[in-house]
Length: 115
Length: 119
Image (cartoon, rainbow over all chains, first blue to last red; front, side, top):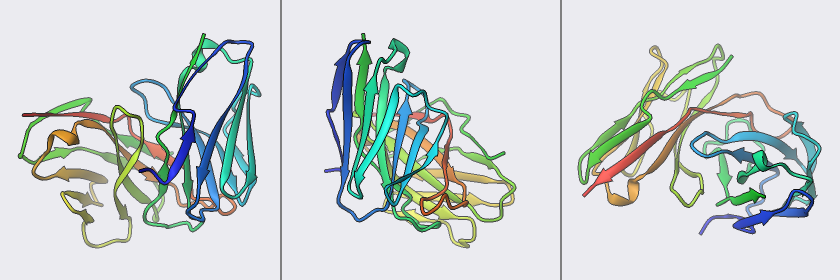
């Protein structure tokens, strides 16, 4: 079982819908990440939260809105998405130390389809 | 700018044989970390092995070993005794060592190698 839990595993939404992706970890990690992965491509970083504060936004469109309610939870709110936003959305967490050997722990992802 | 290159889009290996997945990197940093991740069709990115730029010995984790050649800027993954469950996409990644206010530096991924293990 993965130590980073993402829900739902699959999501189909219309372009006018509002939905949220959820991510939870209980490893005491203080950094959490959202990645977007298109088919047959590597993951692309979207957002980084460090100590519950947004530290990096990789020029992501405003139709994606992240939220970190506490150190264990990370949400990604979706609104007015486009079909090209269909992808696998991965959440990850990590220790805050620069050289932590394990790097970051990823969840299983949410497969999002926008119709 | 940092860059990771995986030149093998796909690889085949016979079950129980060893296989090497290639990875080269480019960076001007002296301190960096190199990772290999496995991604099965289920989607989860599974951490396999880590090599720090100052580590003198090659990293090993069970059937996985990392052949680190710093001067050549290569970090190849060797999987010994391949199993059917090893069939997956494999990503090489490099971590920048900048510290973004408490988080780790960004992971830069290669394009991946799809490994298929034949029975």
